Image (tube, rainbow, N blue to C red; front, side):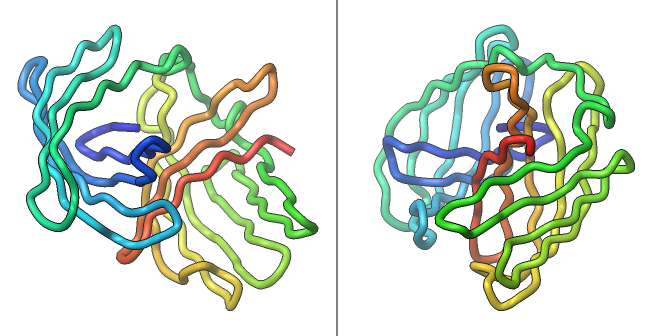
Amino acid sequence: MAYDGVIKGLSFDAGALYEGTYTTSGNNFEGMVDAWEIGGSWFALFSLDGEIDEDSGLEADFEPIEGAGGTGSLSVERASDSDRNLTWTLVSGTYGYEIDGHLFQFTISVDGSLEGGDSIDCSIEGEVDIPEENLNIMELTAETTGTSCLEEGTYSGLATLQDDAGADVFTFAASGPDSIYVDALPRR
């Protein structure tokens, strides 16, 4: 996901989560992203240099500036639902899932406030913002507190509302000072 100079992503092939910033000039962009192992720690800082096609997506070359990692290229396709018009009526609701009796969920109110947590002792409070009409992107900030949180702290990130066979799924990538999280929560 990328919006307003912020980029957050996930690559199962590389086993990595990415977060960083970018700038654009015409159809060209450049940026820097930190890379984290999925479920692990930071391993590299990469520079990005590429081109954007508003209809199809972006292509970029990357190389490590610091840490471990190799050079390469990436291609990101524009999501088919990226022009979905988000409204508070559409976004508000409860999202979550349960795994092995462990519940994780949160509720987004029509004013953009976010509240939730897990069924043990991790609370989440924050805000969601819809920055533009006709663009399926949201900005979010949240604070996690409690003994069962993977890490307490303040997180910021990007989110989309995907339509998965008629069921809305809130997909987000949010990062804090020492970690980044990506998750997809179906509407409950």
